[in-house]
Length: 263
Image (tube, rainbow, N blue to C red; front, side):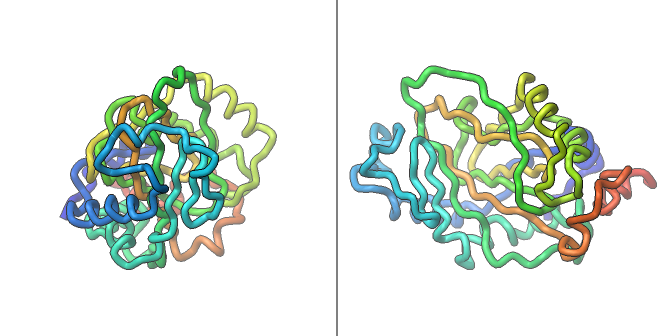
């Protein structure tokens, strides 16, 4: 069983994210990659990388939520509720154990789905430009991004603004709901001007991230599709605590992080 070390947890507390390598099951990742291509538009072929470059043409776009394709983004949510897909990321024994190390044993909601397979097509000759960060709107505690294929540098990796969770947490009227104060936009503009950290890596790597960290999907200037499975861990108490104002101690309901103060 993979374990978060004290150093890992201290890094997460300070920076708001953590990358763990070689976590996911190889057979399930291959199943996910194959499942993705079953839903590809005609002419986009797994065996021909020349067909991977975006954007999607107007006739290839799909505005249905289950298999949304537009521009350079492809969010294939359809298999998110299938048992094997949940087992790939959310209930993977190592992933689940590490989430419990942060949020407490027996505290997590049992998942009935993951978000799905989220992809970014290669940008091709599109000029490089800076990106800004945002904070997700829906209530949850801990995000997990699992790469099901290699993600090289500048390959669209999940991008974070380290330490920004310590600012954005207090820019909301509640702990977990989408109730930003006016200060949120001020801080988002300022923080977005700084450099983000792109979490690139290999198939099987998992990025854990705090729900209030500033983040973005990186731009993909590689020549392969960025493929990732996403899940949001929630504690069973979320319904009761999501509307409470931010705590002076932002880790009050993170038992694993709180324990660092007493070790």
